[in-house]
Length: 82
Image (tube, rainbow, N blue to C red; front, side, top):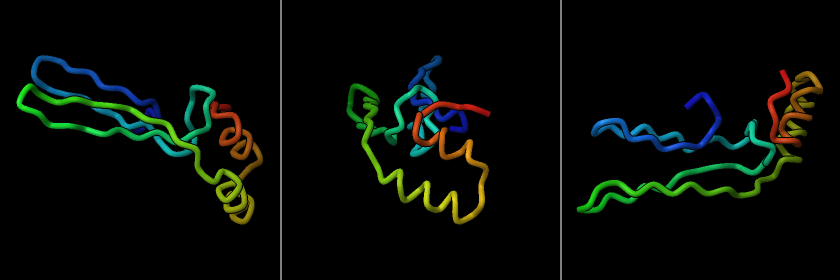
């Protein structure tokens, strides 16, 4: 799941599922991402969702821990910049 990108791929009978991430999304949308799996008799159903979260709280923690300013930009823009 280190790609930060939500996806679901099925190869043969194996499901590869990445729910995405909360923070550091790389698609230009800073919202968090998660997945819901539904196991049915017909197989596996995967739905991906996006939701806002308290980015200001994250930014405050970044500053408190003296992370470089580029991290604030990445969280706000939802883009990888480094």
